[in-house]
Length: 318
Length: 151
Image 1 (cartoon, rainbow over the protein chains, first blue to last red):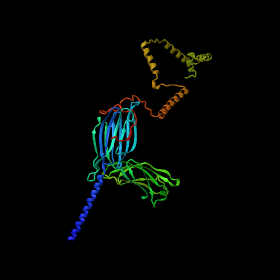
Image 2: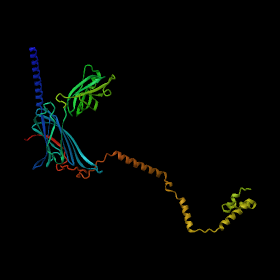
Image 3: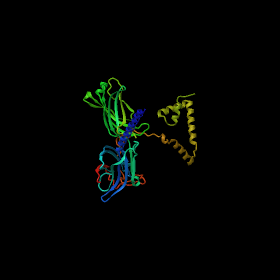
């Protein structure tokens, strides 16, 4: 009896020690990911002085995205920044700028606008900053938007494991609200599985990690059960996850892709199979596309392309 | 009783017959009671008509004239335009060619490049409270780059 009690007590002690160790290590892991802060300041500069006209701070977990809008009576700018922490000291910032400038009136009194769109990718260290000149770099007076990243000491996750909420602090609002700041946090890293089905059976597959709004090529490797048509015409998918929507019960990811086959019988010539096909589906669910009319089909089989999108291991749905 | 020459009696009285025919007709009238009677009737009727004294007033005359002219006037929608066939063909060809040319021009030419008027004008609906940053705007493209922080 005493022996049994002793064994049970020892087992309980071991179990509690193991549980506390695992919670400590996961807590340590959660604590190791710190929040990132972006200080966004709009500054007027000329030869004599420099004047800050607006200032704001966006703070959130790595992967926080933000948008800076500038709107005057003649000019509009939408600057969107997607940020990813690629190493402890480096951020990958993908910027997309869209500007619209009033130009004048046509003969028929219709207002005319000049529009521009550009994309830039910057690898930014924490001792660097981004300079955005909405009106260009001409001499004289300039309006600059300075974006300065820094790592805060605060963990990205709460003790419960949930992400700390995003924060936007307006330190100095712009006059008339001409400069607006928005921030959001959505997963950026996805795992995409692609498969070619022949009469409902998987005969070729591929898998790749995809970053949001970045194209990735996924070659499908035929397996041993693949027919000669598939072996001689392996498929390659050029895919982009171009959106993420929070839904219930399951979040959804949208994708757009091109597909081509490598024609082994014609010197590995690339022949298009699908162009700008798109879809949206819940995470983990299958997205199927009928390919029978677009793929070499000497034996009248049914071919389908199937995708499954999941969050990458580094991401977790909040 | 009837005579084949009764129609010629009126022509004789009106002087419509040639000399030989008139002579022949006069001989026939002397021999034919029917034609002789017809001649007398025609001459009597002519004398009666000549003896009538017509007095017309100017007002009635004018009214009657107006009625006659009105009855002759053709309404616009009943009038006819008469053109020689070559002229009509030329008009039709000219109209068709003009139509085809205007259609060709309108389909061929792109939307006219707007001739900009009043480029310094403001948008027609300036929004309240928005700041004008035009002193910075030299029409250049937005620029984005990174720099090392100075502090």
